[in-house]
Length: 87
Image 1 (spheres, rainbow, N blue to C red):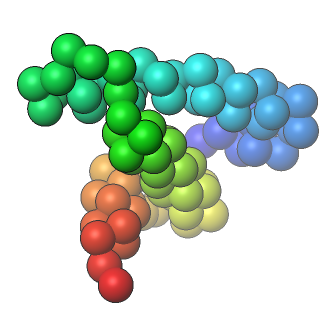
Image 2: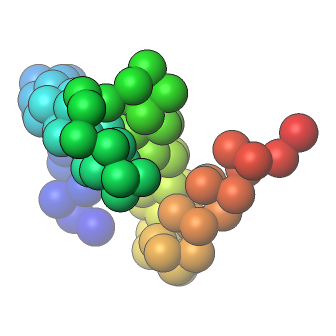
């Protein structure tokens, strides 16, 4: 919790973390493509889903931090993903 707060409160650390996560996006998109049996490069849709997954992670972490860890992070992440399919 302390590390997460420090990263979120320090602009340079927060920017570094977001840059790192942005670097994960292509690999995550390609993993989604392969999961669906494709040996081709990731599609636009898979890239969008990878980006959305990382945003879900960040929103869940923000809510977890705001709750001082009282809320379950896995439950928050599940809720964030479920919100994508609503509406």
